[in-house]
Image (cartoon, rainbow, N blue to C red; front, side, top):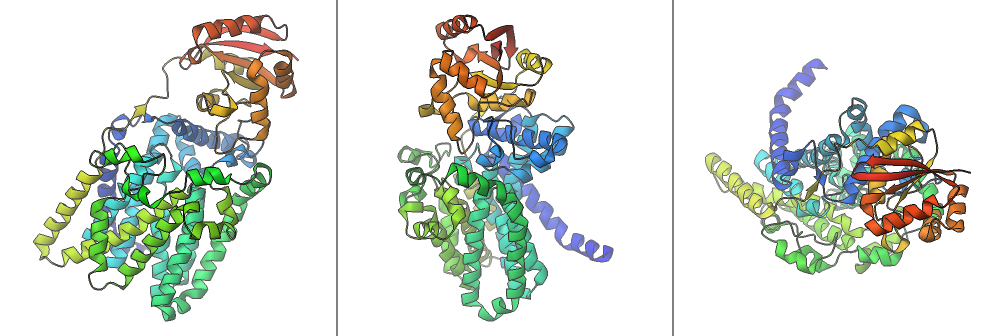
Amino acid sequence: MPQRLAEWCRRELPSLLLAGAASAAFTAFFTWPQALHFGTSVAEHQDSLFSMWRLSWIAHALATAPRHVFDGNVFHPEVRTLAFSDATLLEGILGTPFLWMGVPPVMVYNLLFLGGIAASGVAMFVLVRYLTASSGAAVVSTAVFTMAPYRIEHFGHLELQWAMWAPLVFWALHRAVDHASWRSGLLAGVFLWLQVLSCVYYGVFLALATSALAVALSIIAPGRVARALPGLVGGAVLGALLTVPYALPYLHNARTLGQRDMAEVAMYSARPASYLMSPAQNWLWGWTSQWGAPELQLFPGLAAVGLALVGLLSRPRLLAWVYGALTLLFVELSLGVNGHVYPWLLAWVPFLKGLRSPSRFAIMVCAVLAVGAGFGARALERRFQRPGRVIAIAGVLILMAAEYANRGMALMDPESARRATAYQMIEASGPGVVVELPLPVAESLPGRDPHYQFWSRLHWHPLINGYSGYYPVGYIRTLEQMRRFPDDESVARLKRLNVRYVVVHREFMEPDEYSELLLRLHAREELRFLGTFSDPIGEASLFMLVP
């Protein structure tokens, strides 16, 4: 075994290090200046706060009550709140040792965020080098998958950058078919499971994409697929068995939270024109965003499309045509209810009914298009002798860098040097449920709840507030009854929810509104004023609700 490992390192490690360096460079380039502010800033988006809370909660739960890792401290008294959205369990597990060592959440988040993008590029390198036997073509595919404008469209979403398992599933599937390998078939199942743990959306989409690739391979190579079938079935069974425990909280929540509203699904279903629109940050194509909408600006890049077309017209072309067909199929699936296949799948794939945004299937479009671009780059290489090949690939990469370049990404500093003595007071005063004001109204969620949720890591008390992919009915009812707080009905509601601490944040309110609310709170005998303290952004008044 040591000899085999040494041989593998000698043969594979140099090219993988090259892929890692290239992918890291691509990641830093197109997300600039994120890498420059690695330890202080994150994407200017409420989901960045949400993701840092998820990472922090998982680390906290694994240290205190691992069996209750899905019972986040938000939306009290609800349970399984981590599964109201993607739990990002794998990212949380990987980030936990760093958080336990005291590494700031911002730094851990950025490590996982940027690392997810870079690892996706390395995984694409592995796949395309296997299919083309060309490191140059694989680096081009790495650039396409790493710097796809789709990733900028989801710059605030940690889990949506973790797509590295898709190329690895495809790689294992190809190896299983080419070598009738049980090991590769089982490995495909493990990689699919890891994708579910990283991003539930992508796990569901990848299962569909892998099935489509397997069907396509069975058409062009039925004999080889038949020989590989036992291993592939074994991998599918293994992946399913591993996924079941993780899926249970989501299945329980589906019974209480229900399915996604079809109007919401339609809002996040792409249209063919979505693939002509780019995020506003892109310096070359950003002007097209004026016709776009959130999550629906899916232009993959002209250079990538051009190279994929070159691959379709060059020999050998069979696999290139397979990936070309998959590109069209996955575009169709990203159209959601605006297409033809997705509405049909809704009746047969239960997990799709819990997903809000079919347009996120575009990540699979990016993956197979990157493979197609690799075929095109390989065809381009063959037109030159060795020195010319390097120049040709370098020219392609420069062209792609110019096309994928973005204006400086909008960042924010979620941490504050201020000591949040309000939360220190809560910790010192004993256990109890917390509600933070101002609350949002049901018609304009989430308000300031993402901040409260992120700050809750400073005390880990149960929190009435919450921000996630789903909002429980009980929380919406609380928001309705709290519109006239502190009247009798709203105070009674808080007592039924066992609220002990009421935190009022001055900086989130107009001065007159804040002063008026404090007068009304002081007038209620059940609300004992504990004092005015600092919060992460300024000042907060703290009250204790007496039963």
